Length: 434
Image 1 (cartoon, rainbow, N blue to C red):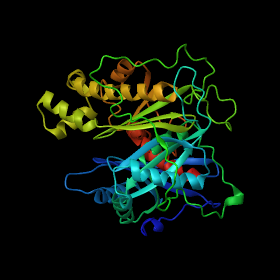
Image 2 (tube, rainbow, N blue to C red):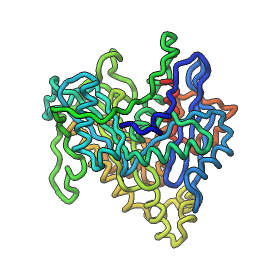
Image 3 (cartoon, helix red, strand yellow):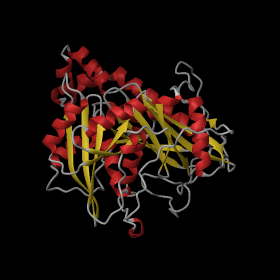
């Protein structure tokens, strides 16, 4: 049952006026924000902000201080949840209409999720790509559909909702961080930036997301193999190559758009995908995108705090000083690289296992890794990803194709904060769907 406080979430409506939205990334050690306006010429970034959460502060106090410093004019906001209280599952089930699908997923949530039914809020979405059968000549399973199921503890949602409301903002959507990264990828590569208002629907009150009531269904879904523990890290056994010969040059590449002939058709069953690795303070979020859809999501328990601790031990300094050295290496770069060798090896090893898993189970090639998050520029990390995964990798330039109001956004600040704003950008991009 949808809780009464969730029913208070107002929906963004299609209306012929300039709209605005703040995307808030409420991290464990810092808050990042992006303000975006939707004008007649399209979405424009009108503000960015970052603030560390000081010792003794809660996120509401830090958020209030950030808003006071930022000069944002928007009041509506979208946020995201992540961590142990959030579960994302990619499933395969029999073909059915949307109403039956929500019933089936409600039934599956009771079996698959490590929470009590009355503790969660759940939603699901069908995927365009067909479930894969496996093997070198995989053409997909046409009798089944792919579904992504996401659920979260209601207490986490309520805490975030009340905290945002308490600083004078109006929360309109709470997303999963993994999907905010996918939205950011689509927006920054032009898929969402060209969204136009539908004049016929300007009075629509359809919410951005809808949570189903408690439901049940008779036919269970089939859970795809759990990526955690699929590959034994201590095993010398190599994964089979599911691809055989190299892919043709015409295969779909979502980063460049090469291979897309008709955007109205479902994405191909194979081809090149992009992995986004968002290096946060306590964990790294991995999202794999193909054809504008998420096909894999996983959190790795390695992040910037582990890197800071390694630097502090190596240089014999306090945590605060080690954090500053990590952000501004100057003459310490080689020492940092040596200090972080084991931490980076752990992160890259888990990333590589995740990419191998999704390639084998989805029949795709992950051709590129985009590094983002507060730890994306850590010395030695990008080189370690390239070397450890054997794939092309780059620090994500989020604002390369995005319109920015240079009178309100400082270019130096944008350059400094850029890689850490992916989640906030993906949330602010929801203004295009309003």
